[in-house]
Image (cartoon, rainbow, N blue to C red; front, side, top):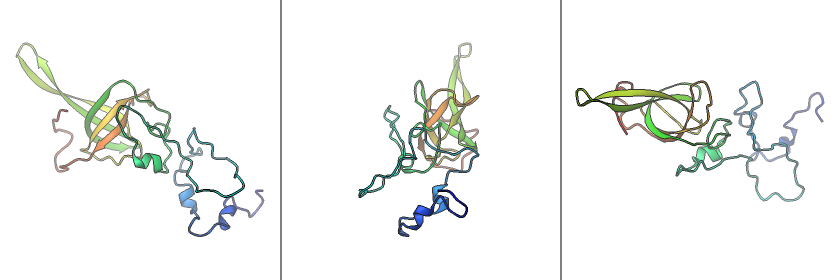
Length: 185
């Protein structure tokens, strides 16, 4: 089957040009050393003889529950992410928090700032405090600094990552300095 000069994509030569996919499309997510595939999908299924009623792409996606809808880019996308709550092996349980994105420089990971007030009994006043939470951001979301994100607690995904992005609200005013702005939810 695989002799010198043959190609894995030889079967695509017989298909019409409008249905043919380029090598780049077939291997859009193959930029790691290991072959990237979804664990729940078997991609080696044999063809069934007869007419095919329409080819549906083999893709696993799920509803995380708690009133959060699965994004269209998660169910119809081509990315492979094991830590995505919609297409991977991660369940959301525990706390659901909101915060502002401070940094998105890491690969598929963002830093979320949560501001809160702390009461000082002696002076009968509040002081401003904040916490930075590191959260995994799936490729189905387009996140930038200043966006308000809803994150849900999950199992530990890395040394400091215990949250996953569930929803993104785009920033209205991008001119403000996100890192020093105090905003409660």
